[in-house]
Image 1 (spheres, rainbow, N blue to C red):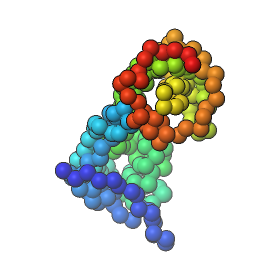
Image 2 (cartoon, rainbow, N blue to C red):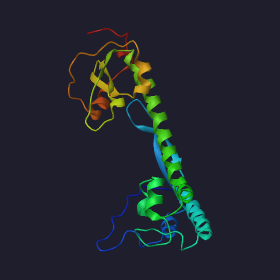
Image 3 (cartoon, rainbow, N blue to C red):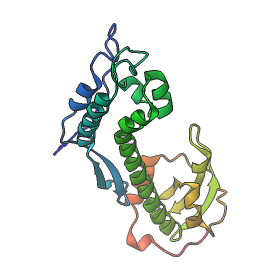
Image 4 (cartoon, one colour):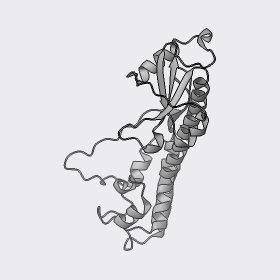
Length: 225
């Protein structure tokens, strides 16, 4: 089983982005290529569980479906208007926006939907894995917050969606730590008071270090210091 990171290659200067037929591009991905996404972490933040996504198999199936659909179309009825090629241009597929791809490439929306489905399915699977991982993390953080003095407050971070501004601060014997949580997980932190102490400047490395310095004996009922 091949598992590796894939970084997209830039288009060489002077070369059109759609020169290689899409089917060839899809089949250039090894059929046994898989990617993985973390879905579980230990208390120190180390990845302990992964979900494998068979990207190569999806690409080869997409190539087969593309050939089948292309055989049903007349070359006079559809081509990429931007590239003047008889296929759905990969450049326009990357937006994962069927209506826009259909408009720019001249394919019927149903054809575009079929071609994009493998990409969309992989995206949905990855998103679901991340959502489950964040939920599991929130349960662990909520449990930790009830073992030590802790509180919550809205903490804005530039570039973050407002539904992730919720943050729980926990005062460990080894120092302050904090975790943001999604609005859908806010019920897990019900009953915690507002946190009024200032952020001490800790980053994730500091959080992991302070967690690693915890001992079983240091866990005690939550009390305000």
